[in-house]
Image 1 (cartoon, rainbow, N blue to C red):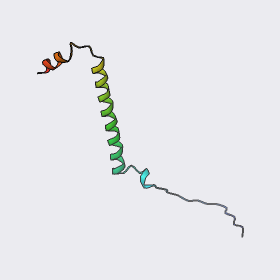
Image 2 (cartoon, helix red, strand yellow):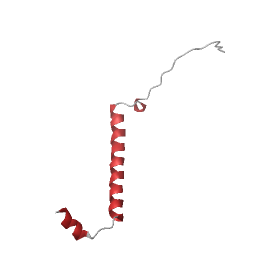
Image 3 (spheres, helix red, strand yellow):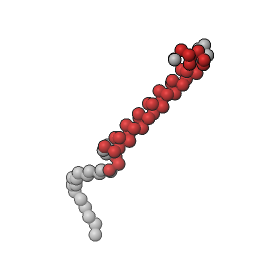
Image 4 (cartoon, helix red, strand yellow):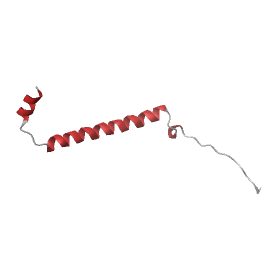
Length: 65
């Protein structure tokens, strides 16, 4: 049986639970970003420490005391 539709108007709302930035999803994103930033800062500190010219380890240890 053939069907002919002249005019159709509809509103479709497709929602996927995981696509909504709910509290759990937001917390996962925030945790990931903070961990990445902390790792980046630690890397910068290691690179700076490796590139810095000093008087030696014993001098650094005695200076901190």
